[in-house]
Length: 315
Image 1 (cartoon, rainbow, N blue to C red):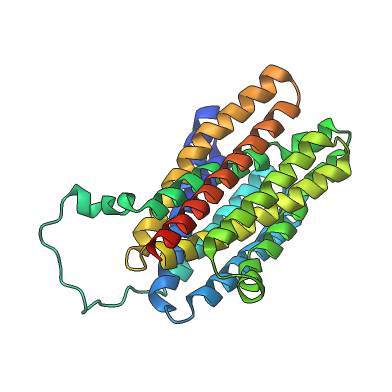
Image 2 (cartoon, rainbow, N blue to C red):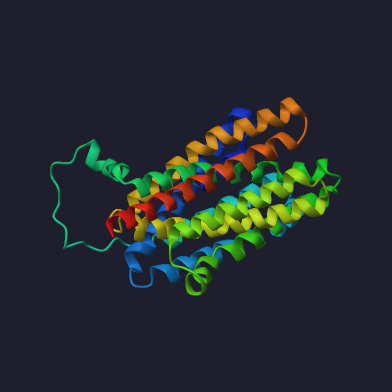
């Protein structure tokens, strides 16, 4: 991340920007995956609670980053803002150096490793893991929404300042959604598939609002609800991997979900840009997000239905 942001500060061509964004993406992925691995290793007894704390702090950072970035850009310019960001990114290295992987004496080393074992392809036989991977691909629509939400507001008549403040709304919704799984667990159900279904129900309803209504207020409501969905599902996915699939393979399985999330982003973001360029309007891309959210909801409901039928047959 530090190398990528510093390269943006130094870049003079479009191709250098592409390399810089690639480095930032790799750094973000590594930071996210390693943070969950650290929690799994050091906080096994209070994993769910610590996940909630981590995600809340991340949501607070998302809220703070938007106004702080605007102030830094206004005072020092956009290039200096990336230089400051590079210095902040370096602090991740400092914090990460504190943690050390504890020695595992309860597992025997496997000297006959092959590509199948090394990549943990055995996880792909698990139907719940397959569902989680598909859900991660569909959730990648959030990257397209983040990319287009400022333009959507401007096209609907919002001022430039108001459209830039949408990041704060996104951060607030994400902040409220991240610990909501804990409340939902205590008040309603601990079934994580129900959590996923509720997440996609909120996403589908929010994108429906964006497709039907054209006012600026409706976009703010849509962004708030969709960011709430993003925060909630980001909290549910690691718990789903740990408690519904395989706790011993948590780190590797969750890394695979990031791979499929990235694949979904690589497909959805260019399609979003193509739709906006070909139609000249936000409407087609919003319909795409609505369809993807509906597909995610349908997949999760189908899994819930077949699981209940399976349980009835066993009884």
